[in-house]
Length: 287
Image (cartoon, rainbow, N blue to C red; front, side):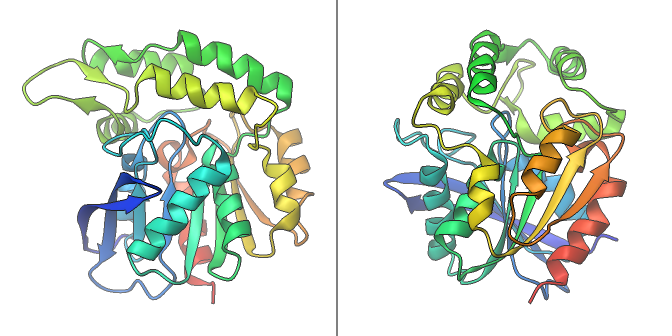
């Protein structure tokens, strides 16, 4: 299904900080709207690399969000609305008028905020295993973040940790590619790190658990008029069948839902055979 293309990368000044992005440009095709793909809170823009290359014909812009990967951390602004403004300004800087916005996990709320804040520019929304949590769930997630390791001695160690903590099937080649695309390692050194410092993740989780937290996709969904595609990992602990029912029922127009039965929280990496074609058809079918 893939098509040839190439990656380009650069920095854009957004919201008073430098945002790093990588962009997949198909050699042929790419007739549909470009996709701004927003990563989850445990990864960076590299989580979309293999998806972009497999699907091939879709132009994908994959930024490292504030405080992640190679992007600077402004030290404040942890609301979904703040992240959403970054994505809109990145589109401005790259002269992208209309686009599809895609978000994984916590970034599903961000993607929906983009669609709310820039409604006239968003042709469609893709949500990948979105987190639908209560205030109590957000407080519990904060405690998990405080205990999460950030540095590993080598890739073998991080693979063991990932397989232990992330549910669903992980084909060996898929997991290896995924981790090499998101982890940070210095040339010639075995040690590797997560693409964020622990303080950044904890600060985000503290905001999500606070009274100001705005990471409730089912609430934002009520305002969305764009076409929406939702992917759910059948083994996911973050997005249950009940969560799917709540979220899907909140949209004014019924979204399309795709179940990736073998996947956990990372369907594009865990079960690409169930993810790629529906994603491609959705994007290329938009007007």
